[in-house]
Image 1 (cartoon, rainbow, N blue to C red):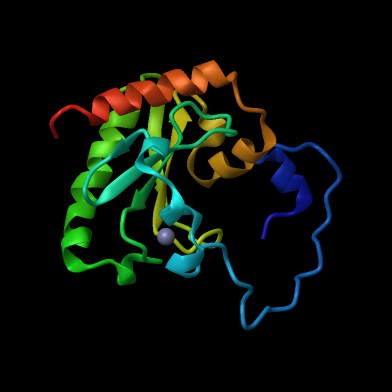
Image 2: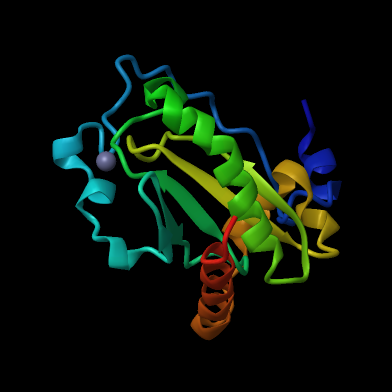
Amino acid sequence: MLTPEELEADALFPWLRDLSLKPVPPLEIPEPQRSGESEADCSSCDKADDAYIWTNDAWRLWPMTGFPLRGCVMLESRVHGDSFVDLPPPLLADLGPTIARVERAVLSIGEVGRVHVARWGDGGGHFHLWFLPRPLGAMHMRGSGLVPWVEALDPPDNAVLSAAHEAIAAAMSQPS
Ligand SMILES: [Zn+2]
């Protein structure tokens, strides 16, 4: 376990302040409901295709704003399902090539060191993968250090984010 001093000294940790460990909360069982637990109560299923920057018969790509990363996108399944175990086999077989296609499109915006692909699922019950482009040279954001820095920094101007998403949409429209 890192001490507060070691945590503050770690380049992956964005804060400088006196820190002490919170008491570990008790377990919550059963766990609280997430949004979109069912198809009938799912904001992703309710969205029209024109809210996304790219779609096909199986997948839709959502432009993430409010994050200090150019080109942050979320890949959602068109069908409602929670995790990998809920997706039909043909969709799972298509997922790998689709991830590679999205990664290529995100890399195409330039000045990206690496595209982190993340699956958490604790926030919503509709299958989604995060594509988080680490800015080129931002070694303080490498690995899991990207998340606390993303939560600590303000996003760039909307025009910057929109331009990156437009470039990703253009790359996705190319034949794979
Ligand atoms: Zn859904």
